Image: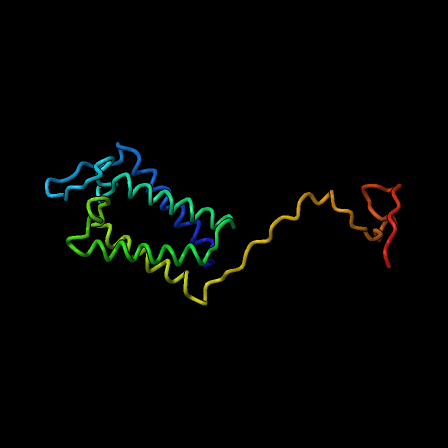
Length: 174
């Protein structure tokens, strides 16, 4: 799989997760034993599994947009994959530590977020540091092809330089 496909796929996944975190109807209410946060805006469980609040939703939106920009060729592919691997691994490790699983009361990093960030870090590390991953870029269009002034060879059947313009004579360069 090429790294551009990884960028597009993870960009769309994280962008979708960010959009879902912004919709109050997509958030399940918190259980009674959920840790308290200093930032309670849009604090709930996305899809009933993943604890999110507005700061984690903003992080998901930023990662999603960055991934899509990387797929479009605006950002560097390896840089996106490596940065995502480091950030996701740090979030997974912080989620494992009981005192830091809310990131000092700012973001919920406990529960199913731990394995989600761990899997994201592993996949991103593979694409970021594996030499087997292809870095080839798609060819960019050169612009309108009719605007290019390239001499056309003579057509075999009619003897004219271009069949669309039978009266035009184009000088051939030798």
